Each structure stands twice: as structure tokens, then as C-alpha cells.
Length: 387
Length: 130
Image 1 (tube, rainbow over the protein chains, first blue to last red):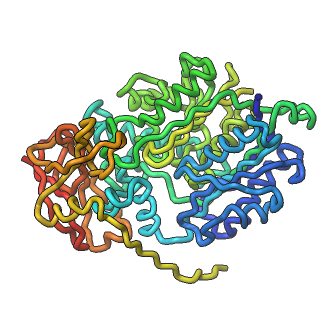
Image 2 (tube, each protein chain N blue to C red):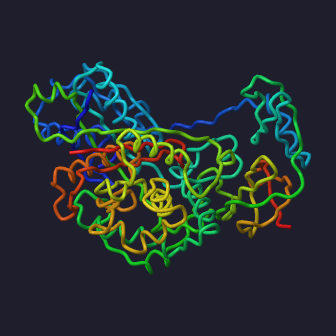
Image 3 (cartoon, each protein chain N blue to C red):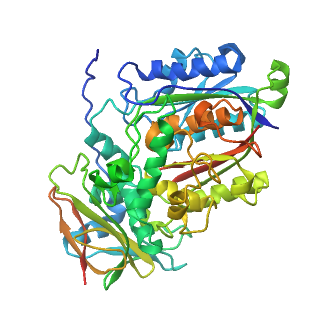
């Protein structure tokens, strides 16, 4: 059964001192309901994607769901680290595809700024395997990706300047996105001169600690017809894979195996041989600049080891061969864990409906890709959307 | 306007009986992996149970390893307050990879293994460049 996206919403990302997690969630839900032109009563099931290890509301699904007006249609909560949002989309999609629901909403939300930074870093550092990594070695989340960066630089000659170019591109797009955390353009020099967080990653190589929410309403083809909705973006395929919790059990550090597997699965199901030619844009997981470079390679946008050159050539800018992260990426729009994957869906749906304003890309195949990684490749989702 | 939440402190007691050999080994300067007597699979971090159901034995890791990835952590997470910036490396020793702390390493360096305690008193693996 075909499943389509009929409504999307997204809050302003950033430091949201003005709202609680419930209030923040409703911003996205309200926008998504209005976008679809339906009400709470039309929805059968809600899925709340929230990691919430930084939150005071330890089990947020019910309070969030109640605030948004879904108290009687059972939320279930999903968690897949930084890929939580796409896990929520996937769960909503499969519940419709299986016939268990006709219309489902995926709500992704995260409040990350209410606790101090050192504690937040310690929580992120536990996103691998606590006992064998954080407890002994003080792995941090930037540290995990930094290890991939040193391996990639040693093997392929990737440079700190190439990493910086990813951040410059992200900020350049984010200034045109009113929902983005950062609204300031930066230069390669700004990135290179910023302080090290975890060598070789510097402050401007890292996505910020952000608050935010996003929501997407999915429905079956039959129900979409009954509702008379024609502004639909279809879910063409989805790939999902995972990898070990321990970094020491990985096959290599120059890419993410789970992402390669998820991409192969999504491409196979959608019949895509050459993604650069067959998709119009991609939203990829750039929590750190090295992550975007590895994503280019894992998603076969270029050959292994050529990711640095791809961004350097401008091929992934708006107007380039394959625009990537037109919305500013996690790097500059922000990365509120549970919201991120749902917000990627928001961004590609806006693009495929040609509603992306100053960030709009030219559509040829009417296909877009999202790539959402949890942890350091612990979870990987790749999904293809089509107008 | 803000409200301060009530404090919540969590400290866990983690059972390590099945890998006690590893934890005690660190205090005697030894680092152990496990190896399955049935299928030959090797585990680091050590696992007491092999997927195949076979019995595992404890084998010391020594000799030289090769560094495959590293980072120096400058922004220190809570729990490591007494630590200065520290370098984490992953080195390959035969069939297994080991994580450890090191000074001044690069990808491709050959290292040997030793154990020691950090500023918080936690025993762990350290690497020394050959």
C-alpha cells in the first residue's frame, strides 16, 4: 500500500527558552494539521520520537501527546538516538502500510538546552557503549566523529579546509531559512580559527545544541483519496540498518557501514542506480562536517575518498549537481535529536512541493532523499520521497 | 521566566562478574580479550558468551598494535572534571581493536599496551608509541 505525506510542520530551531517540550511540540503539530487541512479527529495514531535523556519529563510521549490533543489515540514513543525522528516516520509509515492505521502523525521533539553543556556532552558520550567507552575513556559525541575524521584524513588526504567548506555551505543556506538556529554566514577562516572541540573538529565543525520540534502527517493512498487531498508527497522507499555499539567492533572508520546498507536498501526498492542523476536534492546527517563528507560517499554521490572534493567543487550547493542540505543542515539549522529526522521530511516535502522559497532547487526527477544517522552510525535510515 | 527542577542524582552499580578477569587484569597490567574455543571468534571488549554457544577462554593482548583512528578531546564532559584534554585512540592488535588513551599519536603509529589509572581513579588501557 502506498503511503503519502499530507502535512508537515516545523518549529523555529534554536535556544527555545520561551516554551516547554509540550508547547514546543504543539508548534509543529498545529502547523502540520493546518498544512494537511485536517483536525486531530482525523488521525488514528500518534508516534512521539524523542530521545529526551536531557529532559525533566523522563517519559515525554504522554504529556506531549495530551498537550497536542491526541490523548485518546495512544502514543507510542520511539528512540534511535539522533535518528529518532526518522524512526518515528518509519513507525508511522509501517503502521499505515500494515493496515493498522489510516492516518498517523509522527511528532519529533527535543529540548536540549535546559541542562549545562558538560552534562549534555557526557550524555552524548554515552551514545555508544557506556561501560567500555565513556566510563573508561570519556568518549564524547564530537570525539566519536573526530576519530572518523582522523581516519578519513589519513587514508584519503581529506583536509580541515574541506571540512570547513561543509560548514560554510550550511551557514550560507541557513541564513535564508527563518527556522534555522544560526542566521549568520561564516568563512573557511572563521571555521579554521575556531577552538578545537575534539581534534580535528573545531567549534564551527559541530552542530549546535538546539531545541526544536517537527511533525509529519502520513496517510494511506485510499484515505488520501477519501479526504480529497492532492498535494501529496509519496514515500517511495525506506532503508534501515544498524551497526555495533562499540567503535572497536567496526570494520573501518572512514565511513558508516549502516548508512551504506540503508542506502543500498532504499535505492534498490526505488530502482535508483545513479543517485546524482535520479534525485533532485538530499537532506543528509551533518551533525559534524566530517559526517556530511562520509554521507556523500556512503550514499554514492561520489567515489570513496572523494567527498572532500565534492564539497570543494561546489557540487552540493544549491544550483550544483546535487544540492545537499539546502535548509542549512543539522550544522546550521540545528540538531534537536528527536526533531531532526522529521524536520528533514519537512524540508524535502517543501522542496518537492516547490514551496521552499529562496532555497528552492530545480526539480527534474521530483525525487528527494533523506539520510538520518543515529549515534556514530549505530542506526541509519535512508528514505526516498517522490512528488 | 524559569523554574528550577528538583535535583535527580543517578549513580549505577554495574555488575561485571562475568568479565571480572578483565577488570582485575587491568590492575595487574594485563589486558584480556576472549576467544571462542568452538568457532574461533575473538572479542574485545571481552564477552563471556559467544554467539555460537561455545565456551570462551581469556587471552592476554600484547605485542604491537597499529593506530587506526584518534582524537584529542578538548571540551571535557562531566565525570572527567579532573582530566586535562585527553587523546583517545583505537589500535588494531591482530583480530581485535582496542580503545585506549595515548599521548601524541597519529594514524599508522605502532603502539604497545599498558594499563593505568586516570585522574578519577578509573583503571583503563593506555597506549605508548613504539
